[in-house]
Amino acid sequence: MKTFKRIGVLTSGGDAPGMNAAVRAVTRLAIAKGVEVMGIYNGYQGLIDGEIKPLHARDVSYIINRGGTMLYTARSAEFRTAEGVAKAADVCRQNGIDGIVAIGGDGTFRGAVDLTDAGIPCIGIPGTIDNDIGCTHYSIGFDTAANTAIEAIDKLSDTMQSHERTSVVEVMGRHAGHLAVYVGLSVGATAILLPEKPFDFDRDVAEHIREGKYRGKHHHLIIVAEGVGDTLGISRRIEEELGLDTRVTIIGHVQRGGSPTARDRVMASRMGHFAIERFLAGEQNCIVCYRDSKLVSTPIEEALEMKKELDGYMYRVAQDISI
Ligand code: F6P
Image (cartoon, rainbow, N blue to C red):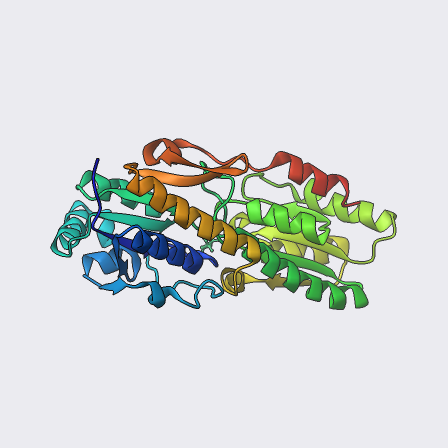
């Protein structure tokens, strides 16, 4: 079994609240087990460029409560080339880094496969507010992002209700509607539009609004996942075809920031701890996954094949009680 003297930790792709808590857990447990930890700044690009500094136990103090990532993050085009990967592996060897903990989403894990193939074992921790990683029911950052969106929409609803206006609210989610469904159910949306479900304006928006009006609703709230791609157009059609005074709100990157919720702090700490335990026990090229209320590790290649289905039941609940 491989023994580790020094490992690196990096965050890559879009940041997510709770990544810091994961970095802290990784660093603290590795040090407690006698393994040195190097912080790699700016994701895989920083690795290629040698942006590496030792992390001691006190270097990760007071970050469990902070959003963003103290290690910074990047999406690296160079790392997607064979030369970039070879360079990154060389930098690891020059710095005595025996293995890497990579925190991020699918792109991060594809990078981890390449690095493992180049001789540097890796383990992945899921961190993305989209919660769209197939192998895990939970990804760090989702709960905080959802709560941020809910808080914003609750405030918005106060003013929209007072004016009897209709709100079209865009939440994040490039290819996935997990955040939109969860937020939509939590705020009592009239309709939820998702990239996974091609929508028909009359059936999925107009009909819901008409039904709501018939039952006495004065304020309608339409949640649109970013990946649907036509938030302004949907709002325009509501004004023109239904004659309702409508406002658009795009919550945007606010959802990616802020102090992580208790759930994200706890999940990130558990995942970071689990990653080091599995890594030091000899597992590599795998991802820490949360399934059926417990942490398990899944080989990365297998994990990348897994597709995350939308929670159809949650969507149905939101629809059924939106009248
Ligand atoms: O992957 C997380 C995410 O926030 C998506 O929901 C969003 O589409 C994307 O990142 C935005 O990326 P960027 O920060 O590069 O604009």
